[in-house]
Length: 148
Image (cartoon, rainbow, N blue to C red; front, side, top):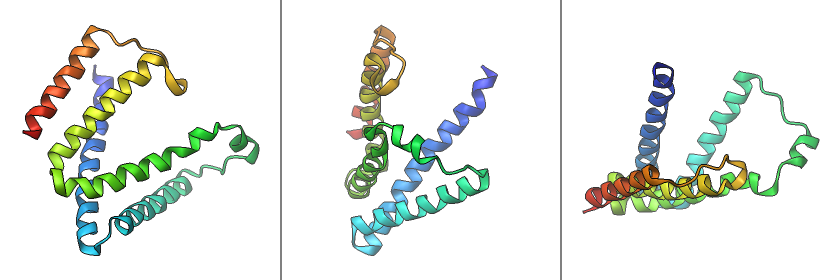
């Protein structure tokens, strides 16, 4: 149990960072008058941070032969990230941070249990069983209570 404490705390910190990011991006959108430029600024800052991390870790560039073996769909993560950022920039001011994040987590949970159940994209297959269904139902109930 203790060995999961640090990873669990870091996961909570990641959740906090998502809320902070969305609130900052929504503010930037209001100040700039553009969701697209606010999203661009968010990605530019993220790109710079990842470049600095790669340099700090001294990670070598992957060889072209390695990159060529990666499935085409594995390169599309940025597309989904941009979709997330763009929607968040527009929806956080409309829904509020709590409702947006609650709905976001509900969507993540539905997708996660589906991907786990079918073992999509190389994930280990984890069947959707009773306790998992109860967890999803409780999460949906939480979303309803937060959204009302």
